[in-house]
Image 1 (cartoon, rainbow, N blue to C red):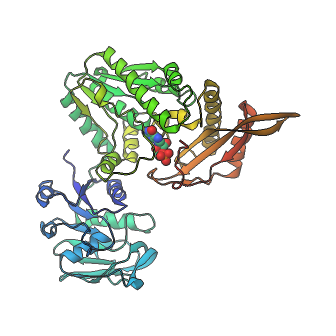
Image 2: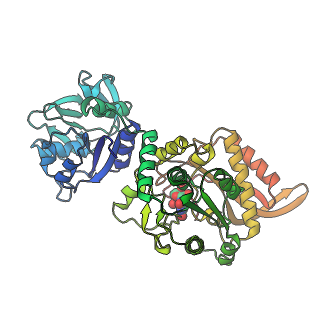
Image 3: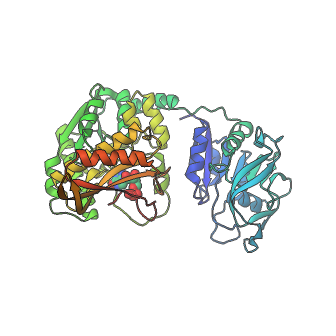
Length: 513
Ligand code: XMP
């Protein structure tokens, strides 16, 4: 790919992905790389600009990440953010005030005065609100630097050396709480790095299709299609690139949402691909008989999935390429340290061991989720596939608490469908990032007509989130909850009570199992 490149150098800040996304939103391609990357390698990539992320508290700690100051001497514009700005100061012999005297630390929204005649602040209000989150502070700028923004406590809210093209901001322009942060980043990219903005999904599609064609030649390609956004977009892209050399295997484990299997099949009917739908629901339900432990459910489904896929792949014969729907956040996250396993995730992508193939193709590896959606639209995928909310690999099996039976599955499919219909009717389907129903294993007493009932309690869950690693419960209006509740209790047998989950993540998780 010959796009203009911005490199985001990760100093361990929690917003590294967010910075990269903001740059991409400005139509400029960027990658997040480790601060351990050799300067020569960075130079070799010929970036138009470099951004240092935030990071741990103090540049003076031995454990703090540092780079050779050569990175500041290669003539490429550098913007240091928070820790990044402090590191830049430190590396050039300026002075950082210690966290111990934390009367000068700033957290949260802070009014900032900026010098609007500087290109970094072109079009920005003279007084603007920025998001601060620092203990240490820049006490003395390195030689040749000047302050171009300040707050009541922080004389160097932004500092520059125009001659050397080095810039630092103590605040976080990437977060929404910084009122004009997007514009400030844009100024760095366009006014200072002189980018043109050549990263669009239309361009990406064209280049990716050409590259895939060249790689695959006349080879055979296999893709595990789940019906989720990523595998659907990957399928659309591969189909445009190699047409009927592609076989998509859609393993229907029976835990899909109501009508979902048929919808996925219908969506790809007119695409020029070999589409194989495997109805394996009996196998899966059989395997899960008597299983109520969440982790056992997940592992059993994951293993069985691989077995079914393997059998289908054998029928197709030797394939040359296997497609995986890996997206950029997975790439960034897998490069970071080991996190505790909270749940064993099952992804249809994780299949390489079981199929005989030459190479893996990951056509979405460079893209963020919002870019994957844009690409899907660009390729002509139906809106309901492009805007589908995330759905876990094990499907409704992990939304039925306790043992799974066909009856419970039907109850949940019907109830979940009504809830989704009501959310869509209220126009909330794009603003709530994930919403679904969970069939609890609890029954309680109710009254219907003149009769006593003793039926299941259904839980509704809705969350707002950007990264799905943390989430808040969605403030769904009472009227919408009421409409869903009334319909579910009336239309779905065996449910007589509905509750709404009002926990955020953490401490809860989004799914219940
Ligand atoms: P949790 O429940 O861990 O979920 O807060 C975070 C997000 O991940 C989705 N999820 C999965 N996605 N395979 C997937 O592809 C899985 O096994 C899986 N389990 C959870 C979940 O729906 C939420 O969006």
